[in-house]
Length: 97
Image (cartoon, rainbow, N blue to C red; front, side, top):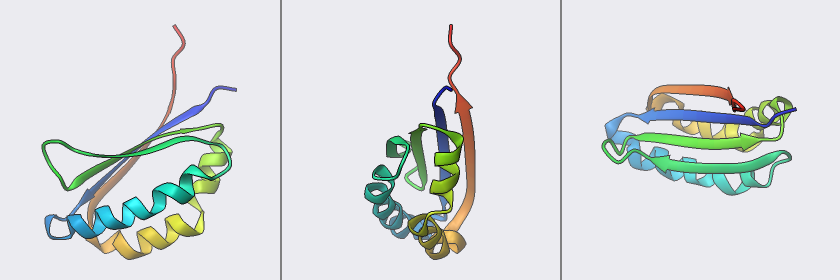
């Protein structure tokens, strides 16, 4: 089975971008220790510092689903949920050529 890539885009309200970034940083270390996590990298947009992107690779869809339900993810989004403009999650499979 091929690995699963996930791209998560999180757009914060301008007035809350520092708090959102602070909370997103907190979830990186525990997520990197989760079963099936190959990489979990947080990025910030170079042209709009209220846009954050996670580039993730997981061993399986089940591992990503478990991550989505983990306590640290739920806690983070309980804190920042009202501070966001939008979120978008893409689950991708690499095309072998």
